[in-house]
Image (cartoon, rainbow, N blue to C red; front, side, top):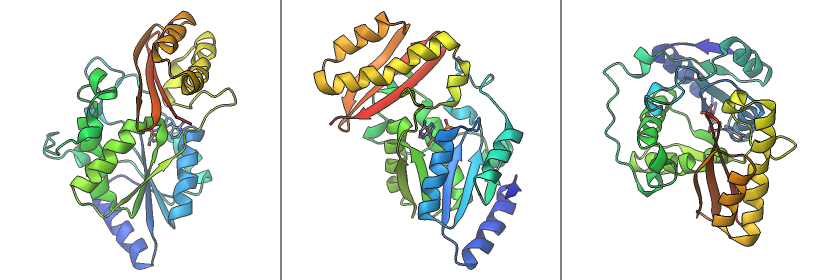
Length: 258
Ligand code: AMP
């Protein structure tokens, strides 16, 4: 696995791989890698012959009151996991390299970026689109994989790629869960043992809503079993999507309506 820190070096390496006939698959992450991230890499392997993973904790997608400073950073163990997973290139850009002329972004947001997450994190998708467009320009992948865990983000990226007419196929990968149905997330590391027990019921309640369609009852149940605040539980894209707080940790999850 090659570890690359600059866009220049990355461009040369990608050109080499492309000239050899490789199809480039890209998995952008913020690190603190878990099996959910690794499942995205498996998905990339099905669609490409050279896998690029980036790790960058992107400041522009965090609001000032959010957890940018405390977000888990564990580059060495992440690199070891990626090497074991057979990743070809690990891209570790610096802030200066990705944002050489400041952090402005003039990409028009579409309908996917309205409501849900955007209501509670109004600058979040601007930051996501800002960094992903820059990462796409740096990597120039043929395909890019995003998790359905962040289902709204996946829709926003699809809209952005179409809006910018980028020749990149965006593929959504299924949510990877633990044995109790909890969607894996780097932020689960913030949870205490008792909070993890409560967190595990989020998916169970989403599955119940699929049957009952009673969003209000689901919200009340989440609060009664120990969630501190529900940002939203809503239906869109034939899914039920939710965001809820356990102490200082914000969890999101979603499920297809069957
Ligand atoms: P992050 O490092 O949290 O920014 O996530 C990087 C990518 O991994 C995003 O496309 C996420 O949607 C995806 N991802 C995170 N957790 C999971 C999971 N449990 N299952 C599937 N994809 C995930």
